[in-house]
Length: 417
Image (cartoon, rainbow, N blue to C red; front, side, top):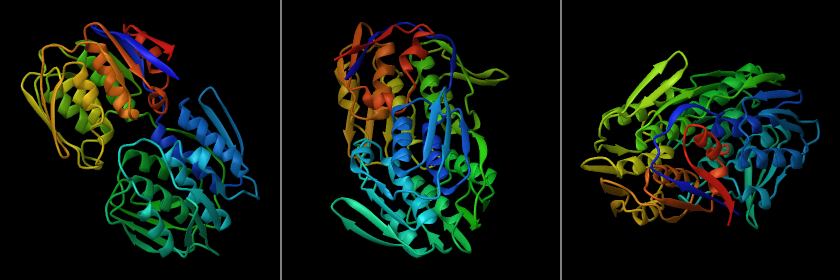
């Protein structure tokens, strides 16, 4: 198991490249199950979750190749319907093979998902939607077992916006008989990217990016080449890195429009963030000040940036309030930040952050993917040495983040624990 050793207190300056989006690439890779023709994907980030997905596709019977951020997948006429626990337990997104398998071969045996410990994140919304489309499910020994003769279109209204549920049902609906309507659907850019990929394969989809998506099923999809969108969460992390260190970074391939709510909050804190022809320029030329945020489904403030912006709030003048409305257990980074000198008080799903003049390096433990990023950011700004342990979480969502940050002035080294 690896850890990061960070010598903080250095302003970051230079150019950093934003990788392809993990949260877009995972469902798009699973969508290749729907096709019998080859598909080629570009800008696929080299991450643990991507490798897990490729391994799962191979187990399902697909022919896969992945090298230099380029993936090639061919799903043959005969597929195996089982996604085993040993793979699914490490990555919640594995449940996204359920919809494509049901649509393609009419059966699936998928282990109940694992992943980060940030909340329940049940899959009941997925299953209710599939049942409306004609599927039947049993739960046996920790596995979801689904069967259907042929999925048929349905009018499905989600109880609350769910990104995974929207993606799973969207993929299934493109090969279902008739029309499917997804009401109260997730509007996240990654959902839009999945829809755009399916459209490039011949799917018939309207309304993606809104809360009501219309899908007309087709008999088959054709192969294509597709470039995955940039990772807006990684991009946001780099923008915060510029602010928390008092530096200046140019983030190339940064999805500016998709980060509007984050950028507005960082500007409110005192950062200067500008879209240029070469990328998004972020710098901090004056003292930071506190702000309040409430995490919400897109286009609201993303829960996946809550931990990172809390790190910079720790050094802002005055008080900040963070309300976490998405997940019930997403403040596990707070105690670790407090070990570094942060002043934070939690009441239920609300955190009150009072800015301090400086943070001090300390040994800290990463509990989930985005918490890991917040601890790295705090370490970059802290005086002294910060040791971030259990960074396998970090490697699930960031491509060797220490290499990118070292290239712009950070002092980080990776060691074995």
